[in-house]
Length: 317
Image (cartoon, rainbow, N blue to C red; front, side):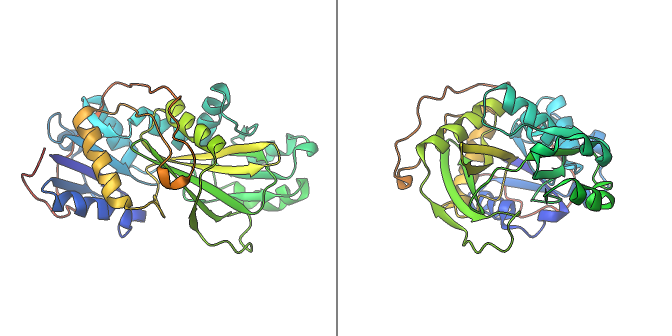
């Protein structure tokens, strides 16, 4: 197969997805790597129907890669993940609406284009977690204890564009990150960016059944195949605080090969969302009650050298 990976400069030396690119190349597939943040692209020529079996996006939110992926989808190419699903989680304000509307346990979310408007949030909602609507990799996430702290952060927040604010979910200082790789769920415990002083070693952990069901529902609601879900175990149960398309998959066993196989399957079959299940190592029963949702196949085409990595022809297709 021939694949195109869009890799932002932020991830140019990152094992995910470049190790996946190397794995696919070793298996005999041809992989082009485009770096949209550091290339001059003849975009009208680069994005062509039939040039690749699928395009895969690994970029920061708000980066130029998503535009290229959407252009590829517009000419009928397959994307991993579905480009409309990516847009649905990259915009955190949009994602909050989708999550709450579809019954996911997500916090009440306020949005404001000017940070001063956040001062209208009732004092009873504090402490607040404030972050940019297009943030990624934990960028710009702030814990705001009260109105006075909001005022002090004003100059920083003014540079962030559209902001969202959510009431803080009390927790033990750790985040539970659930990764979905082609229908399998894996849980990792890691330090919370809101509690940098809390010593927690990032490690795989058993996945509670209640969280597994929520993580599976996230895939259904947003139409994602490869994704991560940030979950907090609050006093009233699990709460979804973020969803990421194509995350790092850290601590997932054999992650590179798993992701590579998932990319190949999706490239062959289009982006049909599979039913997530819990791997046997988690020690909880598999989730099989969440219905799958088929979404129209979209494609992304490539072209141009733009930082090509390890091209190889042939191999199983």
